Image 1 (cartoon, rainbow, N blue to C red):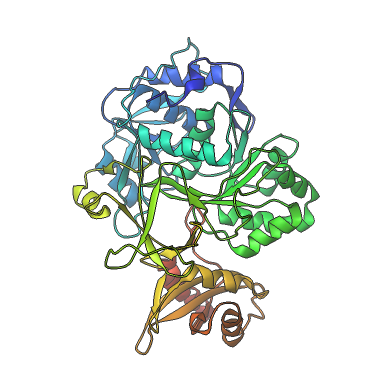
Image 2: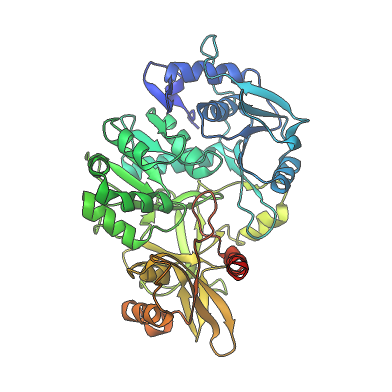
Length: 504
């Protein structure tokens, strides 16, 4: 396999990383990462305290140069989860910024402070070339138990990034802007390693802000923006009042949303204001990237290749990815019809190797013939385009003999002017099996839309059997760091809000 970072071999003064006022050229990155790599062990693993800083990027690149797997850690992690991850991965040391205060659970770990201005010669040779060698161990969100460490090989990282480069016409001339966390594959693998593999530039905002996006995509010359739906929602809200933001998004070559479905209403608002289509892609920690809409290489663009913009679709499988939909009994669905819901199963060079220390979970994740069970439910259009309808565990509702995806109902609810946020779940029902429950954050808390109005609205847009039978109102939806709605926490949050109202 070729080197993960060819641009580091012939280090130049081209910009590589910018975090705020801190900028590293490829020569500076090669020197800093190479110097740090020379201090790392060649066996075991290293933890990385993954703050949104240049130190994190240098630390991960150094680990990859040294051939030692990096374990990125969420700096906002809880003590119980951190204790589990440290005990499971057993890192030999931790890499952190000099000013980072680490939790007491890490007190016994050897610590190396990352110096992004390290003096010394270029030492950017990659010590490991085996494509199956572990590159990263990224822990899942742990929604069904303690987080599991997905072992991602160098082969998986390279294959996924190269497939995206083909789909998005991604080159060394692109400047990627984002404000994503660096402990997850979206921000770290796509958002940092992706540009570095191409020889391009990363401009990290430190934290997402509308002003930062407008500045870096506008006068800053950024060509690509990566974000999650929460970020694009804030951009859509700001567009009517921010002409500089309109100009910036209009000038961007590529706008990409991931980690959760982007509501159709936000798609439409952004396109109406800028003429740009936000491209959605689909992937998981265990699979890296699986699907996306392709774009033409023209600049500025954001024009999907094929049959035109499709809000709500994640496009076609990427190069090298095999994808199929299956019934609950494992039988493969027949030809795509755009209606039948099935679970997504995939194969390809982008898949993870195993769950660390969990051969049982690894075996359970794959079918006997080697397909990975994603747990995501989708429908496929006759031309092969994939539309995600939700997670099998939380978003597939079996009501009155129908299999219903929560995602399409959520999109319908969001088209109601009285709804600011919405989530949909199923609840046990003696008659229907499950009834559809809508969790709504009203646009005007003092005058929320009635349950009858919302049910009628959904029935008119979709079908009567997809209408919510129950509506619960909240002040906000619980979300994780990537903006995903925590559906299992909805009931708990409702109880807390009710208790506060009762006391008030």
